[in-house]
Amino acid sequence: MKEEAKPVTLSLPADASRQETQAFARLCTLLASAPLESMGVNSHDHWIQAAKIKNLYEQPLLAAAAYTAIDLVDQGWTIQAAKPGPVFTPPLASGDRETEKARVQRQEHLRRDEQLRQSSVRRFVERMERTHQHGDRLISIFDLMRDGRELADALQSAGVTTEVISPYVQIVDSSTCELTGFKLHDIWRYFRHTWSNAYATVPGRSMPILIRDAATECHAVIGLAAISSPVVQIAERDHWMGWETDQFLEQVRAAPTADIARWLARRIKTQQEEIYVDDLLRDGVLQPTDLAAPTSEVIGQLRADAERHRQRHHQASTIREVRNIERDAWVDRATTDLFRSKRAAALAETLEVVTLLGAYLSPPQPKDLPKLSRTRRRGHRCAAWSAVHEESGSAP
Image (cartoon, helix red, strand yellow):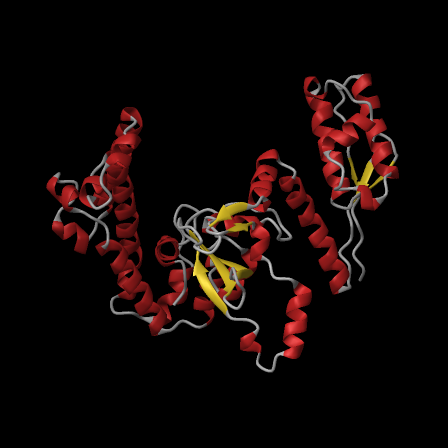
């Protein structure tokens, strides 16, 4: 069954002025008649000026609608005049793989090209392409690019491929390339800007990598790579790997095993043992026996302690003090109000998991696991599964 595009009507709010409504109509008329190949080439300012719109920043309603319309048309949406406003129709995904690939790449190129037009990026690119003295010769970033025609001829004439290409991996750090005088990160950044999508930093740790060719004079760059912290909550990946909580629970219901029960008991025990409790014991928030046989009273005391230290942290605004503590002084960090609150809350949840599931898991009884997977607390998912997934991020 062929998917049908769902059109969307985009119009200004009712309190928009007549002047704003007319300006938006002029803009949409221009965008509707513009050839596809011109989209993405011209900036927002080009279309705003072509529609004879002035003082846009003094008209926030018109500005929001105008920029939205230009972005949608840039992404391949079409416009048709109608009442109460122009109708925007999204592009349909093509059944042909190459056509669909080209469409997606074109969408990504819009952001990339917009980034390349930024003055700071243009200055960086110009600096990398400008020649500079390094040793006894002039060098530019072009010396790190291998001529494709020369490479093709060399591959055809050479008997052994290793004589033509000699790749090696170079980890990008703060050092400088000895052959060119460029900083390694600048080399990586320059070539990253030539990808299909815009260059952006990623959250978490990352390790950029250059693939270079030792068979060339300046060891040309022939590839890029990066190792980064995994992106959280990618539905397709998590479902394929079985990381989704509901999916894991369904598997437990369908096929409970002693291995799963032992793994779950081990994860709960590990999480409890990894929480620093010396100060909690010292201050009488809990007793050593509470760790082996927790009660609802001690769980409540831990939650109250967590809230008390959370309030103290916010009132004192000690985040700068926490940052100034030496990295290896982990006890000093752990006993600050911020982390005391986090530890008390984490231990309270872990001990509650023990009270809910301990009887099922010691010794593990796989026949009882389907009952565990149906356990709910205050309308949320089973606390055990939440703690396990937060701790390990994966199923056994």
